[in-house]
Each structure stands twice: as C-alpha cells, then as structure tokens.
Length: 189
Image (cartoon, rainbow, N blue to C red):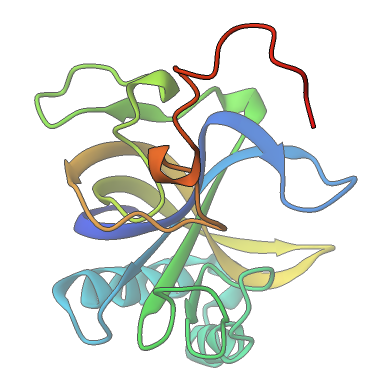
C-alpha cells in the first residue's frame, strides 16, 4: 500500500548512494524518518500496516496477531515501524520511527526539492535533521527471513530546514591563529 507522509524528520539516509545496512549485507537505498506518536503521519502508517496485513492472503485468519507480533519486535531490523525511545542518538526519544529501504536493483529513489526539481547530494538540501515529505510502499514480508511488515522508499522531497544532526563538531576560523604576518618559510618549532 502506497503512503505519503508530510514534513517528517529525516534521521538517517542513504538516498544518493546505496549502502549495506550492516557489513556483508546487500546494498540498499533508504531513509529513516521520525514523527510524533498519534500524529497524522503515525495514523497513516499504522492504517497502511493494518490494511497490508489484512490483505496478505496467507495471513487472512490471523493478520491482527501477526501485525501485533511484528510491531512488538520494536527493532529497525525486524519491522519498519518502531519506537525511538532507548536509542542514544539525538532526536529519537519520544518519536515513532519509520525505516524505509529500496533495493539497488530498483534504482535510486526520486529525490527532489520543494519545487520538484531534482536534487543531488552536492546540493546539501537533504541532510540528517531536515524535514522531508516521503512516498513509500508498505508490504508484507512472508519468507525464510520471517513474517513482518516492511516499507519500500519511493521518493523524498525536501520540505524544510531543521537543526542538523551530526556525529561530531567541525572546525571554524576561531580554532586557528592568523598566520598572515608570520612570513613565508618560517621554521617549525
């Protein structure tokens, strides 16, 4: 089932270059977004999960139980929707997290700006902490890897700036002395 979420916070992303989820894993494009529990976005995702589980023919008699079991896993590796509490990174606590992936064989997801013009990584518009609109498709996994619900990333649209998340700080001019009057060729001490 296709879903469109508006102005969700981009927590992590690999929308420009496919990467493995962990060492040795296949390459995927992906995005992890957050939103408030009980929000419109939360209701859209939960309704899509419920409908997708109900429409899976093999799950017909116990789809509610399978959906509850999938959500109870509460892990990005196990199900597409999970609770951000307990994650040590900035911005996760108190949020609902949706993990989306796209197989590299399907090509890069659509990545566009507010005016629908294409975005490249060098544009710097898509970053951890910005707000985006996403298009994704919820699907039921039922194979040797288990029964759960996943979400395929279709596209990302930049919606608004937000405070950027970073793993560390960067240098600025105040970290250095002005060496313009020290002359060329001065010996190092």
